Image (cartoon, rainbow, N blue to C red):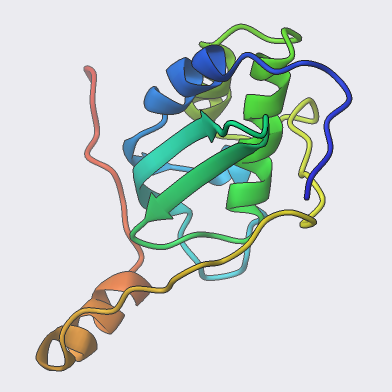
Length: 142
C-alpha cells in the first residue's frame, strides 16, 4: 500500500488523468533507455476511492516504459493533494523532458495484475510492432 499523508481529491486526479490518454511521447514520465522508444498509447488511467477510503488506480497501455506508471502516479498525487492544478501533468507531458517536480513514487502498493497478449497467430506481429522505434505525426507549421 502506498501511503500519502494529505487528503486526495480523486475527481481532480481523474480530470488530470483523462488529459494524458492516447498516443504520446511519455519521455517526461520515463527513464530513457538506449534504443528504446518512449512513445506509448495510454488506454486507461483512472482512479476510484473504495468504501474503505483506499484509492485504486487502473493504468492500461499498449506498453510501458521504465518508471512510467510510478511517475504518472506521482504527478497525479500532486494534483490530488492540491500542490498542482489538473492541467499540470499534461503540461509536463507536452514539455517532453523529465521535470524534477514529478516524483517517481515507491513501488509499494503498485501491483501488476495482468499482462495481455494477442492471439497466438498475432503475437509475432505485435512483438515487432512493440519493438519498432515509433514517432508521432508532426503537427503545426514549418
